Length: 194
View 1 (tube, helix red, strand yellow):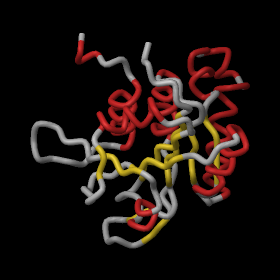
View 2 (cartoon, one colour):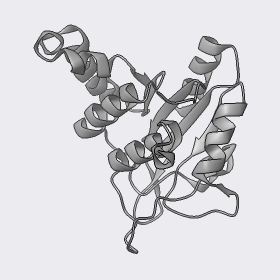
View 3 (cartoon, helix red, strand yellow):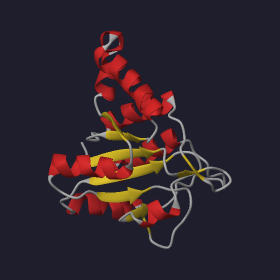
């Protein structure tokens, strides 16, 4: 078991997001992001995983998928999927997710941005783990879809994690992969010390 006791939340941001032309857009929800990140979030004891999308049609899609796995035939067919989807929530914008966390915990959440780009104020995973251990506030880790979070959104965050680099110079992970890697780096047992 991990020694991280902080209340940690995730937000997968679909708007405002950059496209490959650096235009601000709203991206669509993917079924893989719902399933895979929900499963990882439940594994790492995430309090809630927010899909942040301002389009009503996308919110309805997320609700249908979530409801199928938490109360429909899917809940009977694959019970562990029911457990995974129990953390999934929907918010129209980041501020709504923050407000929900404030109502739930009575505290203002600290925002942790993730990005494939480097920033002057990046924090290491080791130092972020220390923050999670020492600060008595909830944390909301936000991930971008499309071509990433807007610079304004990143600037409004309390922390910006370093990008994930592998062995080579390729740096374009799926958000599902990035979310799992980041949760493991921040919330797992320190397996590297064993």
